[in-house]
Length: 95
Image (cartoon, rainbow, N blue to C red):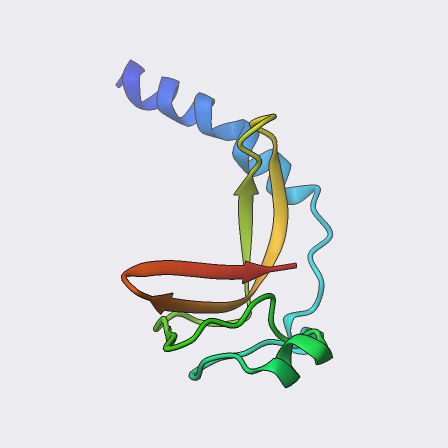
């Protein structure tokens, strides 16, 4: 039982961090879902990249996520605006 409490204690900073984030309303976020992004999506701000022969990843877009900066280890709140796979590599665009 002590290990369960210890695990919950370690997770508390994650929950308290999430409570302090002011997430935008997802209905206002431009995004690309169910298809590959095209140049016009980039220009409109609905996509972060285009790839030849990309196929959409089957996840809900847009959605909230936390990005971990590899240099600092800091968690950064983002909104995923596209998700595609090309040549076996899954790629996610976020703002």
